[in-house]
Length: 341
View 1 (cartoon, rainbow, N blue to C red):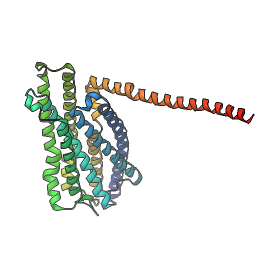
View 2: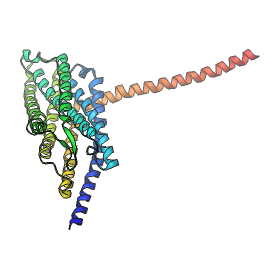
View 3: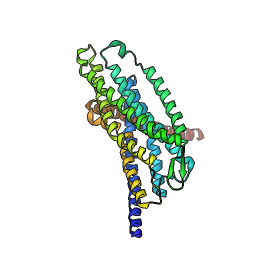
View 4: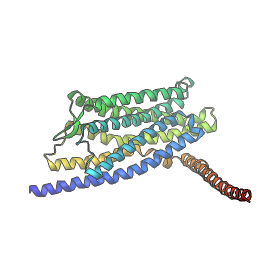
């Protein structure tokens, strides 16, 4: 009986490992493409360069990019060793959670800041519209990223490798903080409430924007950004809740390796929930391109008119340079032969 349970648990662990590997490579591929195209569109188009919500989306895309390369490193470790190596090294155990928390806090609160800024920028009151400026947003982003780094180092240093439970929080104060504040509030309830509330209020503002005397380009841009932010917030809420609930449970009730079946099921559940959560870091571009026809046109404009034209110019300049060098060489050889005569 015990041998059959052991073989079943080994099969579940093997399936969890394979699932982590394949889902990791798939999310990495889509994430790199999506975030790269996001950065291209929001940095190359003049329409977005001075737009504050586009600035937050750009910062979020950079954070997502960093997380994608961190995530693929875990996937490679799983494919080599069968696990993410956090149970082998105390330093890697700490660093993994520090970097993951920095990226999570940055991504989550950039979504919140973009929703808040959209509410203020579409408000019918002039004094509220003037509160947020691009320079203020840059300062706020810098301060928050610094806070995320300091906070993550402080909390991540409390992780240690335990012989039976693996990489877990070993400090009682940090455990209570993670259970009652960090996961349920700081990366759970608080960003969800802020993002959803302000995105709904911004959507209400945009519905009344027709009454205001605004240029049609600005009006269309406000509608486009508001719709994009609202859809991003809805997806963000749906993808974040399962992970936060799971993390609170795992922190308080870690599964011991001495119970193979429970440990294997826990690993499989963790792999599935983590793959759902990681979608937060790759889905921006695909949400925007599905729900915004203007964004589809803008992506096409950047890829065809800017990137492709630059590539053609670069290739043509290289070809012209090679042809000119080839033409110069026969002339030089001809001159040398004349001199020898």
